[in-house]
Image (cartoon, rainbow, N blue to C red; front, side, top):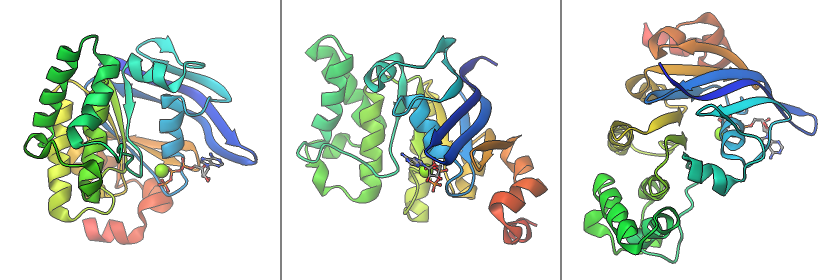
Length: 244
Ligand SMILES: Nc1ncnc2c1ncn2[C@@H]1O[C@H](COP(=O)(O)OP(=O)(O)OP(=O)(O)O)[C@@H](O)[C@H]1O
Ligand SMILES: [Mg+2]
């Protein structure tokens, strides 16, 4: 399997908080990797380090064999590193279509290419029929979809989804899982951060577990979720009983 992203002994502190503690793991090209762990474990910090919001204090982050250290966020986006946020951030004043088109203009060389890319993304994300609706009119779950649609316009090779299911009903969750699968099927590697374990089990072939900024475990979801250390640090004893 080809590694698209490698973290090697990465450390990051915020003042006295050691948010990421000598963390190493790989993301393989084409996979949907789950990144799980308790609140404050360092999952979003990981995304922010990869996306270039923060710089690591030490250790290496490699994308496609290229070291990431001082590249800006926009440079990393253009390299193919995409992310969404825990709280969706659409361009409120713009229509759904223009949210995607604005991002497509950054990546594509001509208006025509940007229009074509926008149309394809609106189809993939089911927004085509309501493309002219103001984004401010969208309910929360569709705002998360719009975040995903917009980031697709930069043609990410790696897409990091930070809790894209939080607050959704079970049927909205199923629709969102189907969308993530469709995006993955277009060749986009996914880093999927989520607390809803049912979704992680359904979607991910592999998970990495963090605890207090450090690597705790990795493997197939069904296997990892039965490990004593993971149950103790994160899932809790009730989970063990529910599953059995
Ligand atoms: N900009 C920051 N300044 C100070 N501390 C921070 C900053 N960002 C994160 N932290 C701290 O780093 C630790 C890891 O936080 P992070 O947000 O990465 O956790 P998380 O795993 O995403 O948690 P959650 O599941 O609640 O989203 C926490 O102790 C947090 O308070
Ligand atoms: Mg987080």
